[in-house]
Length: 254
Image (cartoon, rainbow, N blue to C red; front, side):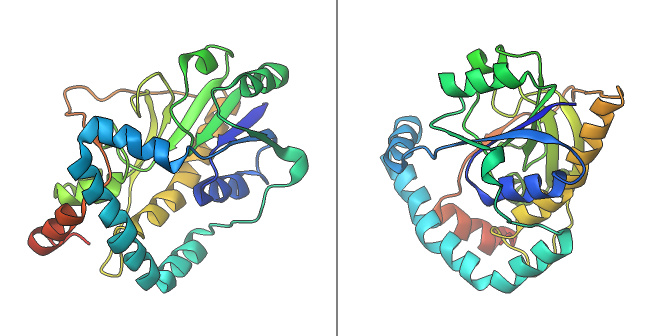
């Protein structure tokens, strides 16, 4: 079974790669460059308006950073508990591209002709890339789909008082945002020491076993997917500074 790992530069990609590399042969790791901050901000302003974007940035630059600083011991404990390792990927495995959607990435996919492409932390993958190969594109989403698409799925589930949908999903990639057919899902257990910055580490840890089971199913011709019918599907974005305080004060969600 030929596997390509298609990733962004976030640490979650290293967690997943290091967890899989000893059990599965990954032919190539294609890592894309980050999107420029200004391009991201301009896109957000166009979508949400200036006031909301400033409110989101204020949250990211103050509360999020403070929570992360205060949670260093908790994050270290979760990394140890879930065996989340950040050892660098060897140079011979790596291919750097400006974007997963550029011609260099498509050429590499066609050359390797993989059976599976594991996706982790990339920008939205274009139809041109998805249609360039017969490989299965499999993504890990830190949220339960289709109810909590987008970002920070665990946080938004807790804000919605929906603990049974506070978790993680492994799904096929299609043209939408976290809309692909579901392969596996699992909820996470959060406790008093956890907060906005620690929820993802629970999700990364649980996702590893889901991905391993998925790859074994593909290898053994037992791969299946499913869709949820008659459930509300929502796309979530970054919290705002004021919204976070409201949810913490009145809903107890950290």
